[in-house]
Amino acid sequence: MNDFEKCIKNRRLEKIVFNKDMIEREIKTADYDLSRALKNHEEGDFKWSAIQAYYSMFHSAKGLVLSRGYREKSHRCLLVALEELFVSSGIITVSLVSDFELCMDIRHEADYGLIYSGTRSKTVIDTAREWQQLALKILDDVDA
Image (cartoon, rainbow, N blue to C red; front, side):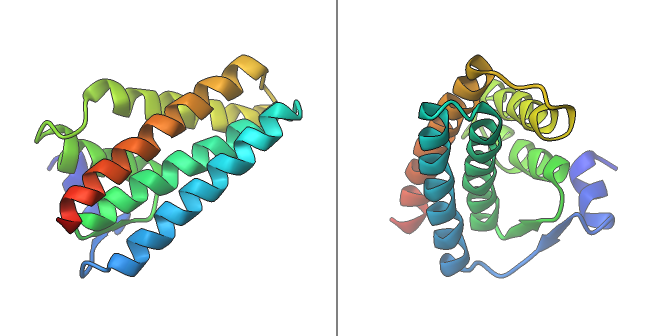
């Protein structure tokens, strides 16, 4: 059994009916979180900036997974779903998913380890922008 199948078996991923409204809410939330991350970064609040930028990326990725008819119930299984549904078909690169995982770790360290900096915040913001642009492009292709 591969990781994707394990996530489904453990109910960390579930098959759902495609719902465009759910996807649109995720993309709007991603945009909001990124705008707040940028504002907090400019104000020097690097902890919240990194956390908000990660959640922007999370919501962009969640929108993508929803577009394939799955809902995630764990951050790790979201990564697994991205790999199964997008990397294996060449739509998303392995390096972009690796960047997502790095930002997940940065968010975790900021939130729980109180380790954060302007450099780390900027890394997550830049990656979140990339994920947002990618999600919009992929989702535009779904709508076409």
